[in-house]
Image (tube, rainbow, N blue to C red; front, side, top):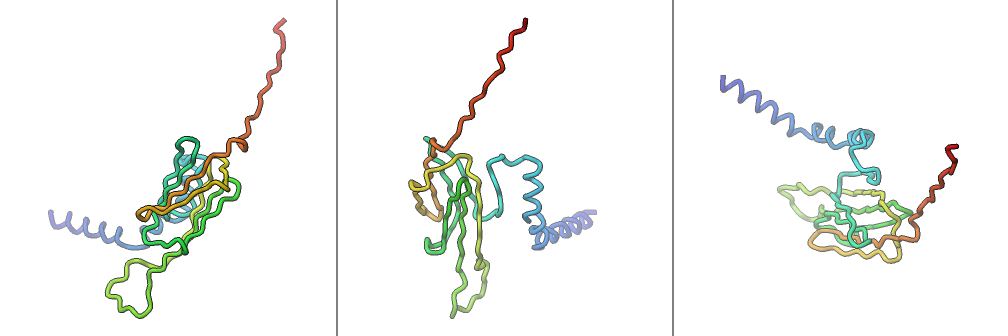
Length: 158
């Protein structure tokens, strides 16, 4: 009886080790399904699960922290167009002339797009890399935030 449980457990673990299983979990269609179910905030757009990011606000400044271990600033590009922030980059881990015995860190390019909840002052954006984390500080542009006036029909109840 215990041997049958062990066999079932081994079959299950082999399923999780296959790349196709994880690709199904993290493919863009899966992300679209999550977005369509409204379980992600309306201001967030997820194109890629990499790099992992946090977006938060403190003192009228939007802050993004993105994990980019080992990435050089020369291999990184950041743009803001209206309220769409795009981070693109390339990890170059494969070096010529080396005899690799293990090569788990692949060369890869990435593109991460985030819809910002507020307009920002593009000319005042500051960036820095701290311990493998890209920090982007974006002051909120209060002048671009539009307040729409609401008028009421004032009808008497006579």
